[in-house]
Amino acid sequence: MTGDSRYAGLIRDALLKEIHRPNWGESDLLSRDPVWHAGLGTARSCYSAAVAFDSIHDFLSADERREFAHDIVALGHPPHAE
Image 1 (cartoon, rainbow, N blue to C red):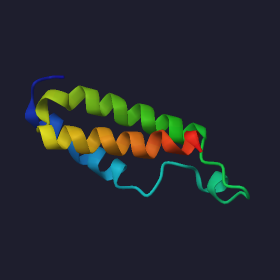
Image 2: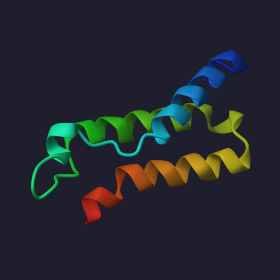
Image 3: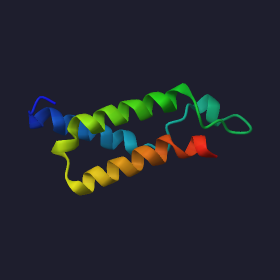
């Protein structure tokens, strides 16, 4: 966004940390029976990751773009499709 790679690197590191979480669900919803996978926390994480990804898209390598896009969808979408 600013063109300064220092900021892009910080955003990439934060996004890597976010996509390596096992899920984006809230613990109280995940502990229900049956498990609730969809909550406001999942929506917030998905939105935040998408904004971060979009803001550093040009900074990322093609492999990083594929990894981030895949993981954002895997963590944000499939729980709603079950």
